[in-house]
Amino acid sequence: MAELSAEQRFVQRLLTKVTFPHFGLIARLREWRAILREDIATVYAEDPAARSTLEVIVCYPGLQALWLHRLAHGLWERRFLFLGRLLSHVNRFLTGIEIHPGAKIGRRFFIDHGMGVVIGETTEIGDDVLMYKGVVLGGTSLEKKKRHPTIGDNVVIGSNAVVLGPITVGAAARIGSGSVVIKPVPPGATVVGVPGRVVRMNGQKLPVDLEHARLPDPVAEALNGLSTRLAEMERRLQYLEEAANQQIANQQITNQQSANQQSANQQISKSQISKAQISKAQIGK
Image (tube, rainbow, N blue to C red; front, side, top):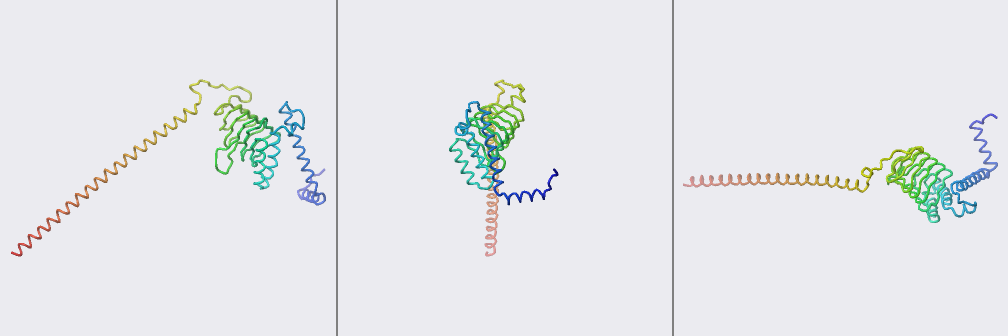
């Protein structure tokens, strides 16, 4: 069959909408039904404890949060911002999972034991992502721009992990429980620790230096930073004190010179007055 031209496809869609106004709605409902079935199948695939469809629908807050988010995101995309935000707030109240309606989430997304999960406004999540309780996908900026992570396909994020900033977590990456990730993660990498460090790449273990003297110490680094800052402030204060003392000394010298000049002028004036008086006295004689 010959491919229809753009004009023919437009006319066909127009006739379909005019003749069968309910056809688009039916197609949309079928699409939603397929997505809902796919979400339920994802729960079965990720959690062996799932026993029935009714149990999955009623007892899995991660699935409920995802469905409510899809509704909230649809409202948000259609510029019903308040309604989308309100629905996301209801979502958090019912499930304990906070997903901003602006976040973009792909297919077959599953949150297992999802209490405490937070997903920010500009977050983007790919397909087949698995996430556990307490995960935070947060921002590091107050500006209205991309400030939350982008999560690739097939990523697993462990319990209580924190991913901050507009960084990218590559496809098939793994983030260990309790890790804090603030730098981009390459595809296929496994990241653990605070701050997050790559310990595996595509299943191959990387050599890790575990000498305690060389491990990162955030407290020591913070103290060193404060010490450096304090030394810099003391140096600036000393400079300002020296500049102020020099200015005072210069002012004193200027004042002394002015006083000396004024005294000299007064002496000259007195001398001139005395001479004038003597001259008058001589003339009077």
